[in-house]
Image 1 (spheres, rainbow, N blue to C red):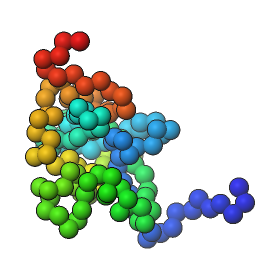
Image 2 (image 1 turned 135 degrees about the vertical axis):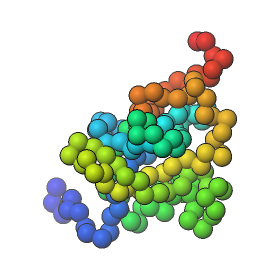
Image 3 (image 1 turned 60 degrees about the vertical axis):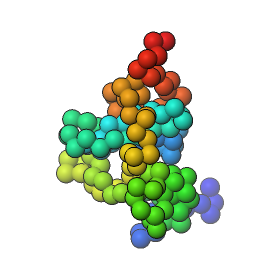
Image 4 (image 1 turned 180 degrees about the vertical axis):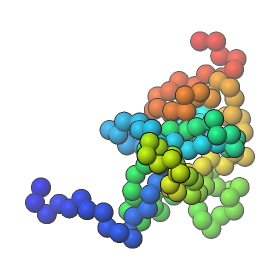
Length: 147
């Protein structure tokens, strides 16, 4: 379209890894992943991560560039403030190595990592997503839920 530009503006964007509700619905899962984390669904309909430090544990998602002007909006959605102590945020924005085909060494990208203290009651086996992929509408099943 006339007047539309899709060029990357160097210095005005940051690389992000999205694995949940911030991931665009029209972007299929790529083989992008972070190591050392598990992903869980929650009773609230959004995913959370749990750090394990184990390379075999992976969370899959999408790498995307985000204009720096939109980062405060994302921070607000994720309940993150850089002025708050980490244990008081809902999620913390952290740089984590993201791996993918052709990126064997990993590339640093921002990821919203769940504050585990906030979600302790959600880390139950029935909420654990073994394939490392969260999808909107995933049914939550608690350990005592046999449906």
